[in-house]
Image (cartoon, rainbow over the protein chains, first blue to last red):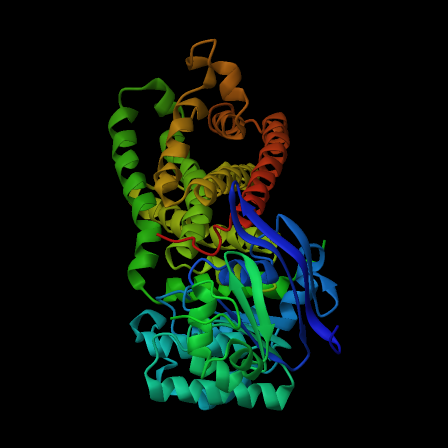
Length: 250
Length: 266
């Protein structure tokens, strides 16, 4: 048990016929924590996040977010959380400002103009507010997607590969924006990432998935110590390759 | 069930307004086909008027038919094509993780479809006055009943088509264009339902549009307002629209089971 969990997942499963994408995972994330959901391709990270968002219905199990049962009371939860992913787009022909205005209205944001101005400044996207979203580079799109995810000042921010396709400088700035937001608002961050140095820098909790199961949890420091490795990159490789903690590999 | 929010419905309608505003070609496109149809049938009417007793009796018969048909066609297309925009732009996942409820999505699609139909068909209706001296408003107050019924039927078909595309992917998109034309011969746009073979007539009467076009002919040929036609059409529309909404919501539920909302796109 952890103090005031805002995400509670219990025995969660998602099966597609014989394929067990997520197979009985349980975890909790405390308010204000930054938690990484790690695993190789097909480990079940995106499936888990999609179920947390209610975008995907679980086969069985329980999800409670901010004290609400997600499958039953999804629309009580959604205004208080948000999500950013490079795999979800925004309408290409609308300008950045138009896209953000539409989503601000969908989330019931007050003082939209001021909110957009703040996000434009914080994320350095104001210069292309009037450009169609489709004309932006991948890195610019990622920043706009994050702006959309921050519009409603979410209590829980879910992120799927938040710095994918960004150059090191922009990725570093994005990480700073995320930590600033978390520290300022007390929000909880849950992110799926393949960037282990990012995980070490940002996260105080790690949940490692493999073939739909939770195979390890702890802080990055604890996992590095447990696996006897020098960094999270090596821990990730061990876990992805099915090597148990403490096992010596020639 | 959470309360329906006019603000969220308006937000999504604003998204389509932005889209329309971004390209004048899109606005021209809305009125282009209804206007071309109106011009074509105007000339056909002019030619046939000298050879047909029926058309002599009511010169606006064909033009009324084509303009009312366009209300049905545009309202269906206005709903389904706008829904496809979300699939094309891979925006559906974003919408479904926002507080927007599926029923609000449906209502905003209907709102946009209404606006697109009014623009598209409205321009053709107004142009018919100087072009052929034909005024659709001569149908009088029943026109409002015809319009509402055709709009409702268009939405019902649009929702069914959108549900099919949500279920089977963009490969089913062509159904949006084909679906309504499959019904056209049965609706009696240009001829009375009695013209159809006896075995086809019950099928025809099961369509709200057939009652509307019979009602239109009653106004133009007999100068009679047949309330019964409008009421039958309305009853059928309530059933079909309920079915359309139910099937669309079921398709959304199925997509949430299958996980297709996350990958939906071209």
